[in-house]
Image (tube, helix red, strand yellow):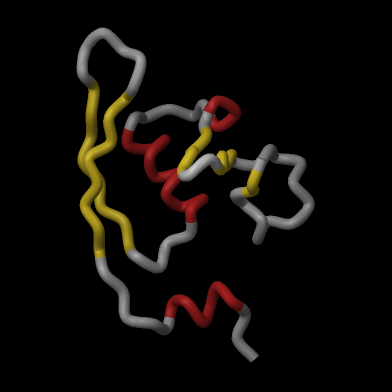
Length: 86
């Protein structure tokens, strides 16, 4: 039996190109990156951090429609819950 992550890998995917802008900086800093449509939200978070060459996981969050998501700490018990709702 396939788990949820494995079953998602077997589906047809799209690739999205994102323009990611660093907010709160005097100079406009931005990067362009591509991500698969079957990526998890946590994959997007780690990809954004990697494009800016930072390891500031503890400062990272994504907010959308009033919901904020954060990357988990190293102490998270379940690695499948890599991005959680605050």
